[in-house]
Image (cartoon, rainbow, N blue to C red; front, top):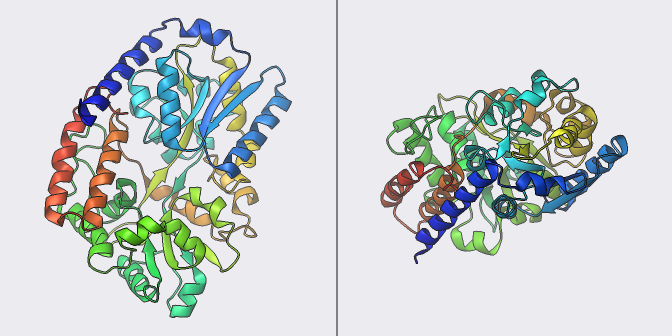
Length: 433
């Protein structure tokens, strides 16, 4: 059986099992036998330490609700864990999932919607949180499916020492694509490169939006990518590809394979590194140079734009009682819970009062310019909330890398990108895994 057909069968089987679970195929009885609640999430060592502190504080405040924290290392590991647990009829009470990945579970009605719980909560209200983050978790466009705990954006981390040595002005709000490229050129040479960026839809999207283009033909019911049909989108795609193919300010394929952009930045041989807040705990280990964060550059005649990076607490549907799960989420999303996680450095709190407090903005902890994430909030955009989007994104990343690193011609690669991905938008619900 081909790889594609095998994956398709796995997706269809998983979809059927998810539907069986959501319909109440005995999973509720098995869940009722477990003491307390199980919380599944992903993160690196520093982040998991923050969640353990959060759980300890919750259990101190709610000694009648023990929490079994079950972390995994990556989002891919998390998706595998969730797929297996749902298929087996024993999903976790609570799980933390990125908005670009929760659609396949929401489409199967495997998530207990959070809206009614938030509406009747005496501790939380919608106005406490970033509206952009909330909207990303309204699967039907109206009802809140999960409650987002962070609201990071894509930013430019930069080595201030390399900028000073090259005589290049430091990045600042309002800088342009031309400023960015000029800096990248000046910082490239003598074994160093100006820019480190992953060739993927989440990295490309903000540049498309800044140039007033669109990723897809319809934000709520997309049927195809529009990276070549829309002139504004195509111009942004070409500018992005030219960073590698024309200007060579990004490490070539072989060098990126031997040393990642993050590792290169940590070593002090990369001027600018594009990532979300997730990079901060690792970047805080740097002691050989000064670094900071800046907003993404703006397209000529364009608008400020960045892509939302947000994870949310979701409750599994079909359980007989969600009271304990909601009590945990309510605590985690309250002031104390959000302050605990802000201390890890990994998250930009979605709770606005904590995001604007010293718990997050402490200038003694790099990046000094942490307000850059808050300033980006009005300009954050989200990718489509569809059941197959995670697969669209994964397949697009592979094809974009082929073009970005010159393994395939630009025109042929972009044609394949849209032709091969178009059928994914029409896949049945549940085939997006």
